[in-house]
Image (cartoon, rainbow, N blue to C red; front, side):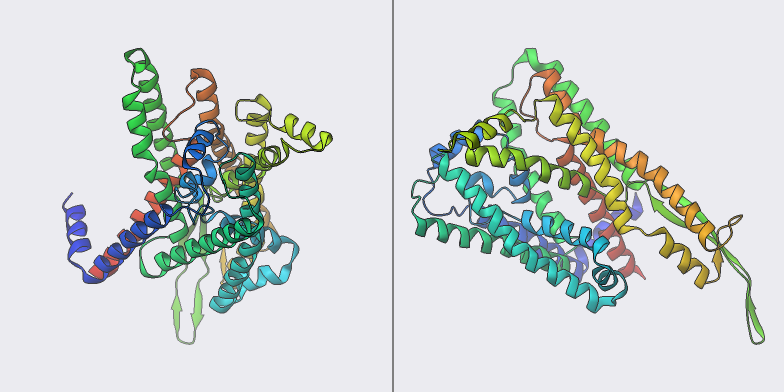
Length: 423
């Protein structure tokens, strides 16, 4: 307790840390102000009615920092940038030059890779912005639907998305923690007061067991996320005895920690991005003058979060993307080669291909557990919603996973900063 008190005191008294915290808070205020500026031609009453009867924009509103609920100039948020990041990571499998640039190109290579990601985010923002604006125009949310207004709105929301990415990178550089993650975190937390107040105003004593059940499930999910996020599988490593001239160093035994959930929340985000496509197509073409398009859109409109097929496909996609993303970000062969180059070996395992096979088997087993956990977390809100009949849950599994993961990462970053000041 004394150590925690000392670090909190250092957090407040240290000038550099105080500046970083103030910068993050200032960025949050700027994001909230930008989220309150609507694009031209929005019918506020129609927008409120549309959002009340449509769960399609829930995830997108999280990524926009709450800006989509008011159709603000930053309504796209960091969604296009996240999609671009995922695509660039997938391209590293097919394009070896990109993988070499990101992993072996040093600081300059990583900066170039990040620049390509930003460049890819611009056309993605244009496509996503055009699709959303088309849906909202068809629903009568945007009153002035002239070609000039559409072009102006498209340019505004695209620029707003890149502005959010810029703010996120500023937070990473001058604040504490990952800026993009903190923007998503702020979007989730910003919506909590409204949802909690709605639950209070619509409180019915008969629903008390349901609220207790939700609170219990929420606490269990938080405990599970913390355990899985912090869980590690250590691989014992021994460094061989080295002799240099007249001096020698004895062998050192240590371990390499492999996280149980290496992919984080990325598989859920990617799976949701794919599952949103049928709903987006349905919203755009449901009132189409072409009968065949309208028929397809009407069929896809039944593919909602209440359908069994949606839940099954959601779980399968999350599980599959967990394996895919882990294989992209972690290379057992590269690790075994690095161990061999540095004169290190896993006790009882021959260096080289045998070590590669050993590490690959371990990664495959822990990814199985991590993938199943992410899949359960993803579909848990759907199961609870269908069993209880309550369509409004303050924190879904995905949002809860993001919030807890960001808080854990932020605590670690703050702890690292305070420890560095102490030394």
